[in-house]
Length: 411
Image (cartoon, rainbow, N blue to C red; front, side):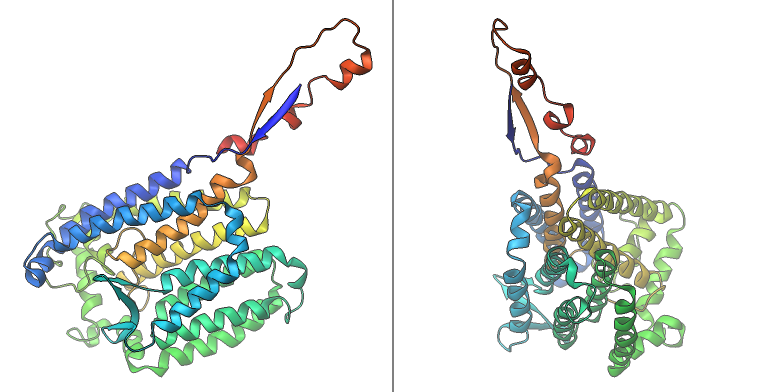
């Protein structure tokens, strides 16, 4: 008996891929429905925006596929270089002439007519670094100076660069993701409590340091105090949700997209979904997200190595927090903040970043040890002259040594 092991690349998880394709199909319908009027007036071409979106989607899927084919161990090996590139790009976007300013924020590079946000590379870079540090040096986590402190320095540098742009929403998203990863990764609770006691007052100061942030906070609590100013966007969003009712006005029949609700196909696309497809449409959308996130958590729990587990958890948390911020702002549950809905809102940079996160998850799912396929080739031998010891030596090994365990059949 001879046993031959071959590491065949498993197919991408069908549940996760199916959810992503459903969300992108949802997106195509809603971006097309909500962008026609805006594109007609702004570009004199009603299909300009949806045309660009139909180019971004396959590009994002290609990025996700390529990253999923890379051996998961590579992400651990290049954690520091990728983090360095991400921080360098965040610095470069602030340089006049390199970065592009839109609506008072300098967050974009302009390349061949397309705008790219370096923060979309920074997010997976920080996630991989945090997972690498906690997975490689678990013995250091018990001490603040060797455990949380180095990771806190990386997060602080990232947050400072985000605040200069400024991008308060991404700062909140990255902070929440890292905090949850630290908790799961084994950072002592007392260290996390110390960090929170310092960060929360600083976040409060950052919020009130800029007048427009104070205005967003006050309009979120009482939008009707300034219905044609700071509260206008939230009021129009709530009108859209309310007019949709349970079943909605019908696909393409929404009114708020006709220049009543700004950013209707980007940050506030959920309001248009609520208006045209009603509560049923929102619940279907949330159900797809729930399946995607639940499957991601299941894959994380199945990993034996902490690095793999934390990478998957960080990527799924990043998507979940973005979803909560987007829906919370559109429904008046959180202060108004420009945060696209993952895989649904129009936005090329955001979609590429989301596909990068899912590419990391699928890379681990396709390459980890649970996908080791073991093939066995048996040889025949004459029984004549074979001793009992010889037969015992060549007998079939136990099942646990020749066949994968139950977890491997799940892939």
